[in-house]
Length: 66
Image 1 (cartoon, rainbow, N blue to C red):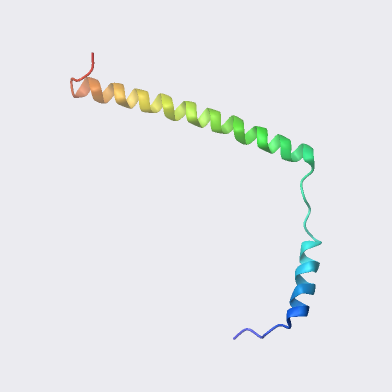
Image 2: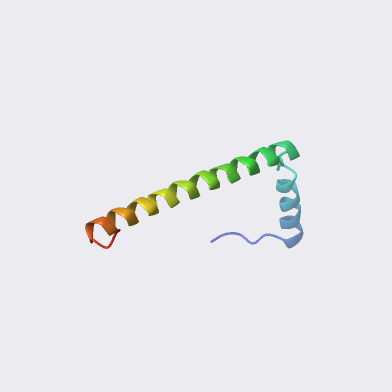
């Protein structure tokens, strides 16, 4: 069973651990954000094209296409 920690000691440990965090710079955050947005656009275009292709193939196979 885990030993109980004094709430004040726990808060000191939390403060100690949070001081070890290294936050990204504004530049790193902007670059990551742009990269995510670009990948979202590529993924959405890919899935749109795949959906259109699958729909066309199914329409052709089921003879409901033009």
